[in-house]
Length: 261
Image (cartoon, rainbow, N blue to C red; front, side):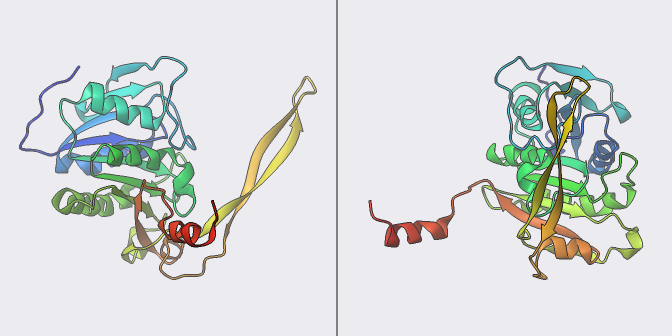
């Protein structure tokens, strides 16, 4: 399956969690085409909220499919992370110069980065040493308008290709769903300290068996003007550098100084 690609052009892997037919992915492909040789490896169906899940209990299917603009494309039966793993190990003959994931239908700001399949695909690429970015639009609708996102996406991707990022890091980019003329610019910021307050709607199926439907509300108590939530609410594209090293370094000192073993 592996083939040679023109080494004079960057090799760009495009993936997502909304599935290979999602309009957001097509918009991302269009934004990447002027920057390099694009290869798509994406889930064959929606995989939102999968986080960093991988498939270990049943076989993975990988099928080459026709895609817009004659882009080389494959659909995978697994998770977004599975897609990146298969792309690196099976599809591509070399490590890509860039992996972009999205454009997600809906925000992945603040705590959503943990649950996001979009971001986990980008995190997996970063683990493999590939410069990676996850892109999201703050509009959950399938019919969301992605056109105004492309110029910001291209600018950020161009910088990533030219300058890279420190080892072990990647970018979480969220774009507000407002007219392009109202977007004030790009703001590099931190992840807001916000969370979902879950509520489970208890129901009964036609056979009288109970089941639960997850609902909830988003609560942001972080009033800082340096956060992604503030940036999005005030008309900026938010860019948050993130890392997959989850070590709480400040807690090491606390434990060493206060705990007794």
